[in-house]
Length: 337
Length: 145
Image (cartoon, rainbow over all chains, first blue to last red; front, side, top):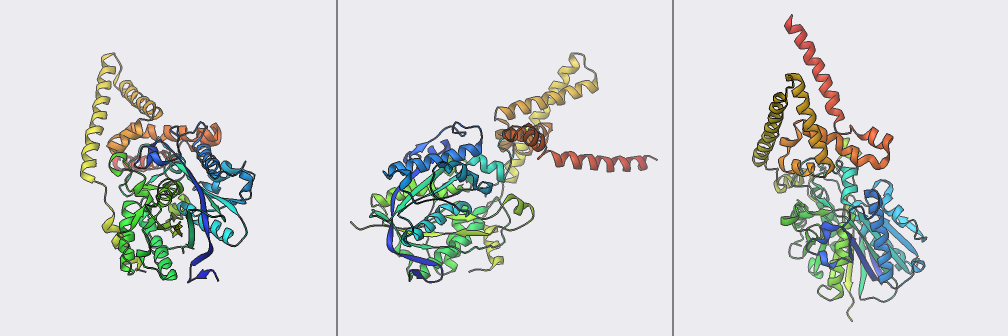
């Protein structure tokens, strides 16, 4: 039985990461890890006529680069699994409609990369696929248009609000040997602590992250020390603080090894990004460009990657609903050579 | 897992509040500057011979024009981000609230995009502005008698 504990699966054959790709916008390119992305596109329209088309082009480009870096033709991928934030997942759909490969669209809000990597690893370990590309995308402007206000409308942001990352990430997973492998996945439960402020998504998502991290540690009988880093998706500054407080109350101190992609991707002091980065691309591109590289060169050897998602819509918020949240954990390790 | 009440308290404690005093000062200065600009325009139009009513209308038109132009150039949202209500409460803010969706939703076409979405932000102001002016008008009518 590969299943262990109540939410975790341990892969009998570690799933290899073949390659990762990241394409980001100008602001992300100017951030602290800006030089590490595969491509920085300075035009927010990416040569298209709308924010939505631009987001799709980010997804197309990330998947193309990922296939190229894998040294494999698109035909050799058995599935493409992708998710984004736009209604009916049009960011991924229009971006990947010409790939001509079996497609599984997923929605887990900003946890898409974690959800995708979990499903892909299960498919590969189950023997249903040899190679899979997982992709996630988001765009600051299309997210503002859908979730907040038109871009040129003047309004002040609250200090708790986050900044949607513009870009897309793609990760190619495989059955064959690789330096960096996925060894386990813990699927998150939906957690709702009755947070209703859509401008404080870090606070809404922190309990979900805490729940999944603790579930993972319990299911695997591991202490946080097993990992060099526990990396959440887009909790930002406020959410990260709340995560550490929550896990401490649940009996686990992860403060020494916790990192958050929403904190790593922007410089809060010079880039005016308030609580930090967010969006499907946030965890995706930060993992692809930065943490994967650290694993590859041996600066990190074991990480728990935990993308987080706030599962609300503008309509649910207007109707006074709270924000259910989710987090999916993927254990990624460097193979001892 | 901790209780919802306990967590809500933790959230309140760790979430920074907007800096009200600083925002008020910025709003006062920029809002005041817009009023000074309006008053100067008024004086100028009067100087060139406009009657009181006409001068007032010309001032409003000029401010709306400036705000829409700045919206189009992508500057106005930065001004509001700094000045808050100082720039969004005067007629400039109203102009921005109509122009911004018109620009944003042009991609969905002139009918279902620009036409349908133009008043998505300003609409409530028009609806409730009209209703409250009717109520005030009715009160005024009876109090006068």
